[in-house]
Image (cartoon, rainbow, N blue to C red; front, side, top):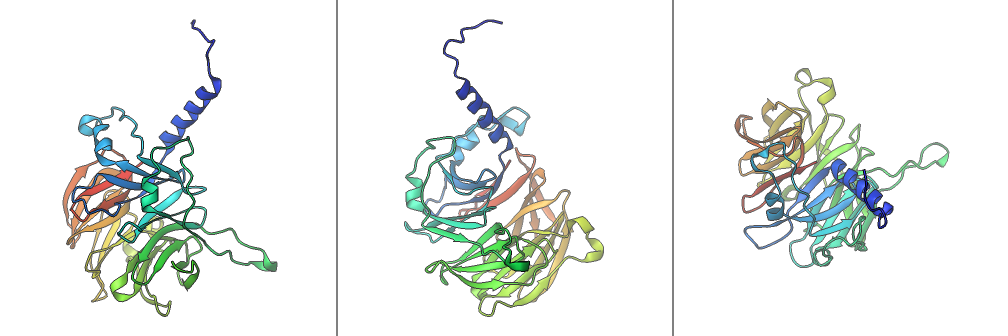
Length: 345
């Protein structure tokens, strides 16, 4: 073996190896469509396990995929914008508002909910370093710490999901201390704490037409909360006799546009609830754990621990299954134009 090592750059070589390892281990936990009047969107924002918030061109992603979803390695796609948003994994992204002053919100393992001006975010351009661009958030909310015996402070609980109510000026977060928090956007202070779950929260949605939020927890229940009183008004759980002990966790929930129907997943189980009637209308099982659900009119799209995008009707019947490139997906997003997109590891 021979070669000219005169210009060998050991530091660049090591950095390249580390970057390749990070890319292989990177997991995308959540996706969101940016506010746009364009009926054919080309950008999507993602929150990833390295704490980054990035914007990708969909057309560029598709062009780098191997044909036929075979085992050939897809070429790496560089993001349009890459921002290091959190210390630790970023678990969710949402948009607050629709105009030029819209905020891009994210939350993560560091217990923070952060917001950036979307207009300024898009102007950051491509990443300038391996750790991404730096941009000061215009909103930075930190979960409270709880006092234990002798005044000792507990660790700051992580935020696993967020929801918004723009009319009420609120951001809701689902935290690892089994509580949900309502934050006032103007004052950046907590307006309400929702207590009642017995284990940490995985997911949260805002039912703004009824001034309610709905949360899903590791304790196996989804709960509806009144945002005026902070009290739980309904508890929804799987049928214990039909649910394996290790899969009771409510990992994802979704509301339809009318806010009358709720899809709720626990492990491989999917239940659909008619909220005005407070009735579960169907329960069905998938072939693998469901990790995200989203409504498409009166049907439900689901992704999870298998390379499939499944479509269910309200009665839990599988209507179609579309193969995906990834072996496991954590997020599905539906655009108002009818475009569905899912991203994973």
